[in-house]
Length: 117
Image: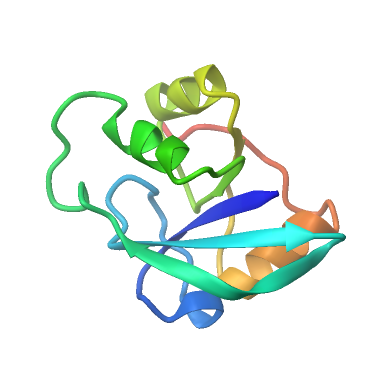
């Protein structure tokens, strides 16, 4: 399973979760197999961090990266709709470090997909 996590820095698993997925400067992309994170993790810059063009650009960009789950602090209802359309599971309400959020998700403790208002 490929997981994308909205991050505040390019520090990989040690990066802090971003409160909003679309404006975060980076995404940490990792592969999970049998409940374990495979190394190395990939960090990519968000090309839309400072300015969104068309609606759905960020979800489309992340779909192209092959993610199946997106984890973020928060996300608007339109973005949730785009991810749902692409078959990507949305997990919001995350905070702390990327590694902590992924661990919580894998244990079933983090599963919210409530959009921000």
